[in-house]
Amino acid sequence: MELINLIFQEIYKILFLLVPVLVSVAMIVWLDRRVWAFVQKRQGPNVVGPFGLLQSLADALKYIFKEIIIPASSNKIIFILAPIITMTLALIAWAVIPFSETQVLADINVGILYIFAVSSLGVYGIIMGGWASNSKYPFLGSIRSAAQMVSYEVSIGIIIINVLLCVGSLNLNEIVIAQKNMWFVIPLFPMFVIFFISALAETNRPPFDLPEAEAELVAGYQTEYSGMMYAMFWLGEYANILLMCALGSVLFLGGWLSPIDLYPFNLVPGAIWLIFKILLLFFLFALVKAIVPRYRYDQLMRLGWKIFLPLSLIYVVLTASYLFYFNLLPIAK
Amino acid sequence: MIAHSIFFYIFSIIAIISAIMVTASKNTVHSVFFLILDFISISCLFIMIGAEFLGMIMLIVYVGAVAVLFLFVVMMLNVAQQKNQWFLSKSSSRHIPMGLIISAVIFFELMIVVGGWKYKPNLVNNLPELNNELSNTHLLGQVLYTDYIHIFQISGMILLIAMIGAIVLTYRQREGVKKQSYIKQISRERSEGVEVIEVASNKGVKIDD
Image 1 (cartoon, rainbow over the protein chains, first blue to last red):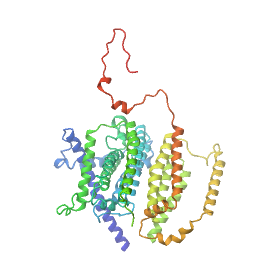
Image 2: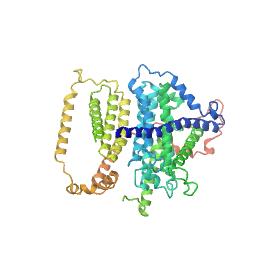
Image 3: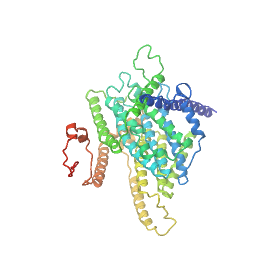
Image 4: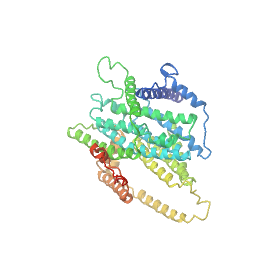
């Protein structure tokens, strides 16, 4: 009986996290389109509901009622599995994001490695979707995307090492607490810029959206998908973008810490600050989508391997020697 | 503890079945997917015995990087078409003896290694001391960077040499290929980019060489 109670408690907690994430994914799609439109002096979606807020709901209804078409020559099991894997992986990574000192679903020791592992698994959804479609454009798109995501993961991993050198722990809550005096965006500002750009590439956002470059590949790995399965790819993509924003704000912008540790500010709950920081980063993501043209593929690879990788490696050496010289290395008790 | 053993059996059964399916499945791409499933369930087992760092590194390195390259190679070579049928047809069965020899060699090597396994004499005595507040990431680092630092660095060197070797083997300087030099493109001035040429009539002009 106790066990069943425990399980229900956990399920309740998980729903309490997942439902807001899914709702905010729908809202964030609307925000993305709105920002994109305003930069280009258009209106964007403004008809359904107040300011067009319910546009995503209308889109979701449309996707649900459309027919799911499975190509006859496709590998059916993997074809169906691919969007499910994309969306599941995008959602399970949220388990370790801390919303305040106590509000975290799973406060595990290796939280940052967990997020890194889950986001590196995300490439399988795309590869499986592209391969199982058994068609040329999805296959090219998925191969492009695999190469792109693997390359940019390397630089993200090394940027994370920079932060870990300053913290001395892999736990996300301790990473946030270590920034109590100074957010890591100040000493590690070049790494924050590189992290932001790598996150754009990792989530296949413009200007690095080559896997689904519509002018060349129709829609890349999503070409053969329709209805709810396409919507699941789409939801997973945006949940991943939100996750990258959350990771960026935990690593560099102090997570749930308030910007100033003074009276009116530290009354605001940490979750509000975290959401505010995620929204700020997402706003930047949306702006980049609107104002930057798409990269060529060789430029993308050159940027990842020849610029970001050496730069972040040099910064690891710099950070380590600075901390060592001034005796600031965090040593475990 | 019951839940613990239930999960242990679930993960180990998945690991064994998927390991068998890696060799038994007819489609090579499916084999790679089963290999990935095997890696994931092994890392779940690692996490279950409390080695969360090893489990996560297993996921990141093997599933996130190595298996992606496997999948890449298998898809690019289009071996998906060659159905793996050694147990059905007789024509391609000459690979079996070679495979048996290699697997026998690997098996005996493993036997020798496991048979001759010795812990560091101090390690066994110090085991209760390891059981303190530190997370296993710290403990692993403490052992790896003090007692085993030479072995650790040598293995890093071997990986570096393998990487350089792979680059040397595959790199070739190709002649007559147009390459873009980014520094040249960026440092172009207007004066050298635009040129007014008097074209003699009926002669034409040669540009871009």
